[in-house]
Length: 211
Image 1 (cartoon, one colour):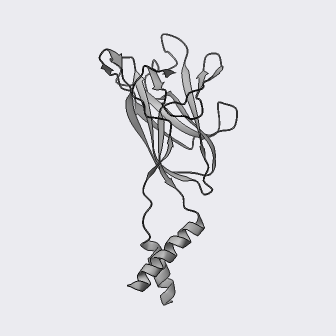
Image 2: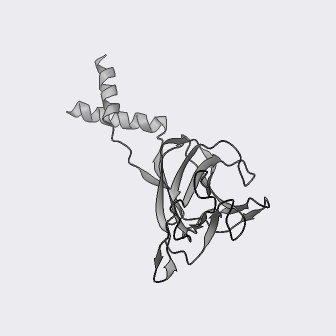
Image 3: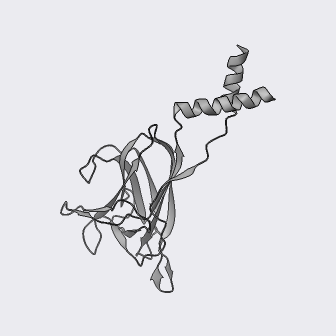
């Protein structure tokens, strides 16, 4: 019984796993290199657009996700409702996954210029409590259901390597695959495999015994 309590104590004092950057396609605030439209159904200058950015979870026991960071911008100076909805769905290979949303939140696109040039804003969507098993996924940016239907915004392109994003034209149903990922970062922790947990517990147990 005593050894059982020591083992449980060892697990309880095992060092916590700190949040880490799990996906990073480059946080780029400069709109100059490029952006992909995220627009609403009544966008005056053209069709409604959504953007799709894929990523993969390679770790056997998956990830616990804390937050999703994106860089977005709006061209409407008097639009307090420039909300963009961010969804995570499993990638079904169609380019436009229609499965259930695994997590969703909204971010507000900023209207900001520096030296006369548009600048993107780094926005964070809280996804605490989301567990993603090993597999392929897509982040979807679209006009928020309760936001401005005339949304005129863009998701800024990233600066690091990664899978190219895909634009979806809601009016025609066409897909427009790109070669550049969008500016995105996913923060969280890799779920330790059972053997890793046991190793941590044993190490903590040895520490307890030395005391």
